[in-house]
Length: 625
Image (cartoon, rainbow, N blue to C red; front, top):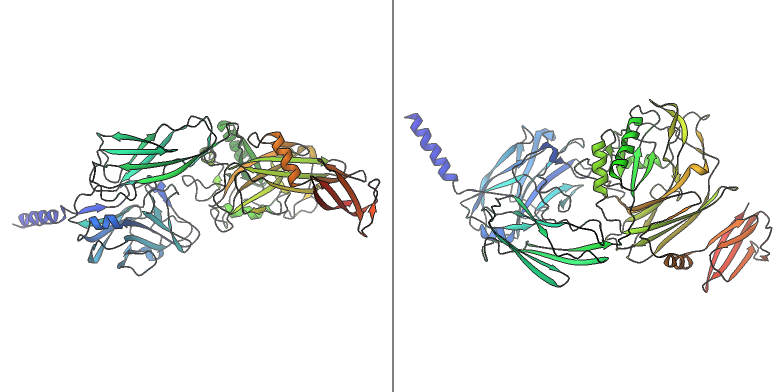
């Protein structure tokens, strides 16, 4: 009798849940490699959002429980705080505390009182937060396609939409009793963002997720490009709930430089009028094609140290990775991250900012274009012991847009060791934010000195020797507008030897600055002093001292000359005489008393120089040594 009663009870339980619907956006694929954290705060969390249209379709149905998957159980008291709410910042409808006994498994939250959906809610959020140490990754994703306005995470005291972070969906699931079948497709982030050159063979795809509760077997893709519209019908499909589906976009003309607007709409899902919510079925973007001859270089900054036993191997790994990719890569080696040494410059400790944990640094390490590739690291820096990590980071950085072309021009007076640097930045495309910086580094090759596991005469190459700007972060640029030329110039004197203020042995901390082995590296990119994941180098280039490098996509030579004349003149002193590089109509030299003096055999001192070029006067104070 007891067995029969148990069987009946089991049937009743099954019957009571036969019409229950598990709603969410994530596949049930749980992979420990998909754990992550955002920002530097101890408080972390995730939430998913249901739209007004979906809630209207579920009107009168009840939410009785939800399930969550988290990446670590090392939270305060091994608990997470769960909630159901109409806003992420207000008072929840329901909330509770759950114990995390095991990470990477579903944790069930049964509401004390089931919530009945009214259909009047603008939206509903269900999620969790917890306090957790900075060395643990609490958040979980399925690495599917990003969908806008559906997945959120708690970062640095605020909730943020994770759309565009390449995370996919949070592993959060809601049980809705007696829900009818829903047909719902949500278009995801498509790969129109990227670096494309005119004439390239480009493959473009769009993807969407089945956010309903029934399989999708057909849909139409309506594509509008430059005013022309095409419709492609897809049938005989079997896209299961929570699965993503990708399809190609054809008929895109890549032959012309510049921008093309594109709009893609998913329509007639499972037939006309069948879909619950069509408000999230479209995506609009802009395709941009850079000049066919566009030149782009990647900046690889390594972190090393003379006392680091694994660094010689790391140097070889970096060299091998650069060679294997075949990309144009400019390398700079910062002697920081392990221990300060003979080559550590005053700016170097600033770059520890890029480590995942600034109190626990390591070497050998590297970052490429200061990008954070989430599949490899939580910060821009990766372990250089792994060639695969280096390769992945290089390939990822190469997909990002360069925005600009650079022209780096240097002149060197070897007798005085005076170096003049001019940098011109020509934007092809307007940068969509106003927090960019440019900087100019000095780099030296061929320095023979001690290296742990490398001997006393190890050759140190690409050694960072400080900034020409005199600033670790460089100069801020608020406006990078397409076609608007930016120019900058500075003259410095390179000392006979460069001193490290961090190396304790005063008898050994001067390194000869050999001019023929030195070069200048210039770059421009995004900057955020509070978040090391919001950095990327747009483009960079390098020139040996006294030489120049104009990237092929910069402009025609006549355009460059015109830009130089409009922006600045190179005024310098040679053998006691003021010289001007460039076309000008009048040159006058004055002493500090205001008296005009002859421009020949000038005595040591400070002078005021006035140059008229193109109807404009330039005034500059110069020093005759």
